[in-house]
Length: 260
Length: 260
Image 1 (cartoon, each protein chain N blue to C red):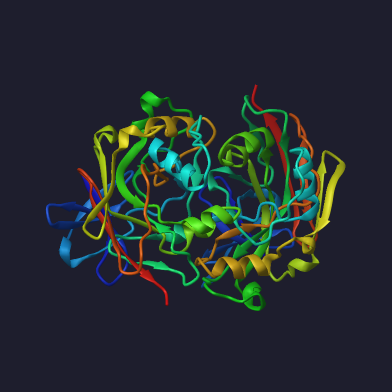
Image 2 (image 1 turned 180 degrees about the vertical axis):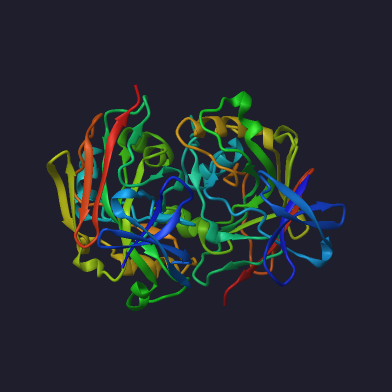
């Protein structure tokens, strides 16, 4: 099933997408909901960020080639993480498919994409095993963990490096019923493939993160976990269009709009 | 004015506290609201976490003596931060006044309090000056940034060191109309004063953080910023009661409950 949040000039609603039709839904996607008789052509609606999470988690450095590349950039030996320590992103930065990535004037040229799987929690969980973990997943989407590497290296936290307004494109929708082990990420800038990888090559997978996190904290419906990216990443410049495709989900596309 | 969130066995409501009476409020504390005729004695209601923020920011190392102490603990020279880089906390960890701090069995003895001012944003802001910043504050409350220092040192992020469930006591309520420069924090464990400081001695104050953050991101009503603590902090053990008092706000009291 394919879930979205959408608007048509007024308030935002949840919707279910079937073929090219968006069916407005009333109620709670995680609980009781009903399809209304209100339908739209997909091309007639504005897709919104598909989920505003209570807490927005991010796995960070979680793929071997990306860890190795990032260490080389810093002139250091790569050190792979030894446990699944999760980080945070902020909802102010979320924008939907098609929204510009608006880059502050004082950003350096080191503005880079990170194409990654977004996991949306569907049921409250605490103390779940790896074997049970995927039962608590609502569905999967696509995130672009846009990063300004100069701020990332020099600020004490990643607040503006990763959470400047518009630096977290997400969408276009959420697909349920997938196996994360079957997913493959392809990242393009304009029409050039700049990176691709299998989600399953993560140092720590979705099951490990959810299980480990749930030993210490309660995950609730709508909480979101972005899984990190693999490989080297490149600079984007004003006007570049970054698109991230995951099979069985779709494509997230956003243009870079550098403030003058 | 003194705002709270409370319950009396059913759903949670906003309330305004006048003397020892809680007046139930309908509507939006940040916009249009009305006092209802539904009132309770303060002692008859359960106070809840006074605000669930869309994004939960924390200033982190923001007072000179605390920075110096923390560096000494690590056997390093103290380095004061040179700019107001904000970090994050997570809402799963929030608990109200009177709720136990529940410590996982595998925590080390290095479980410590951090008594601090909590600032709640009242109006959407972007690109505001330091002079304007306090106009965007709704009110002030008290936070205990409970930290497990072993996890804080050894994990890659502070996810369980600071955001294990119940590690973010906050309350008992929010007070509007205060000047943060006039506030003084007193921290006790059981009946012993273990630390006290003036909020105004922060390396970067409330105005600086709000203004700096708003150059890159949008703050929205309900967003919360905890300002960091000063001085050395000590271990708490099972059964200890930590209370944090800020003049003109009140006292936040929570007991340590170590899982066996």
